[in-house]
Length: 241
Image (tube, rainbow, N blue to C red; front, side, top):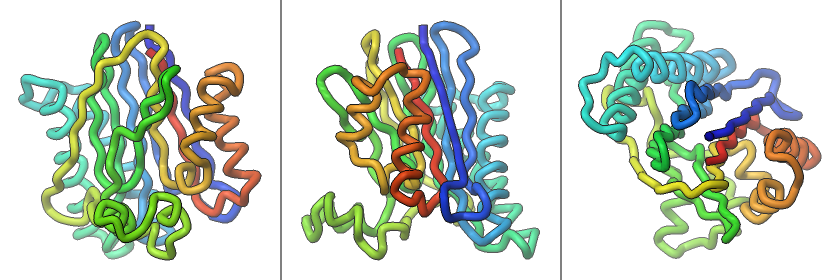
């Protein structure tokens, strides 16, 4: 049976939480989770993330997408969410230029289908260790891939918040899709960069595997970020197979 928990917080500096998330486990073999991190000004970032989550979830729940496979359904829902954010930004002057990241997972049985746009992340955590499933669409990730900086340097890079792909920025969006087979006890963590920029992969691994009850893990990760000043909004969603 899939278990899942989530938390979001505006952090210690920001006046508004522009992250949004959704989490549902409708039956023991099915789960849906999505995390969005909005951008585009004091109001618009919140509008973008909330609109993206709502549109994405509604598209999947309503069955309005003509898709044969889970990957197709996720990509179709993301495209509808992208169009909703893009159209709102084009029609509302207060929302001009807004956009949002998105990372989502659909777990069906032992299979996990993962989608990402931007730099919100999905991690796989097992007894053997932690691995990042998604690849950031960001300036610093491109520099890491080219070997110009190390992953450690990327965490402190002055351009670490510049993303190269966002939902709502253009009329169409291209999402990256991944599929994993899950064993009993395996965990998936979805998070915004407000967590991953502050808490290291090894700290995430420790808290999930050794830190205590899984139900309290997201709170523990948030507490670590808060203890270090939490300059950005922080969102974490944990699923356990």
